[in-house]
Length: 96
Image 1 (cartoon, rainbow, N blue to C red):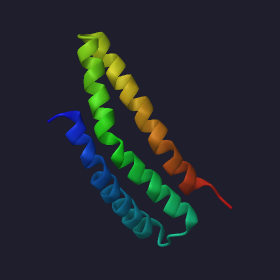
Image 2 (image 1 turned 90 degrees about the horizontal axis):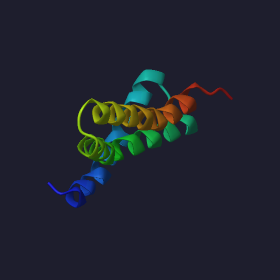
Image 3 (image 1 turned 90 degrees about the vertical axis):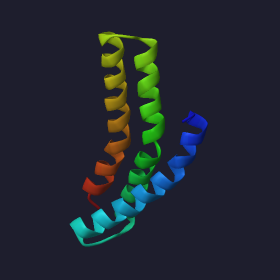
């Protein structure tokens, strides 16, 4: 499947991740205030960016074949993933 078509799936995946994050936060914390709404939005952004992240992972592995490419791709994926997950935890942990 070409990436131009695969990117069209980012929007519904992001929306599904938002609703799943909203449900999980309500279930875990029992409330859904402004901080939790922001965290659910960040969770939706994480879901929407999974397809481009996986595509970039494959490109890096293809450009640098072997163990070096695999290590670089995993490092990129972990760094990008934590850059997207960090604000979720920051919003849920911060106190007023």
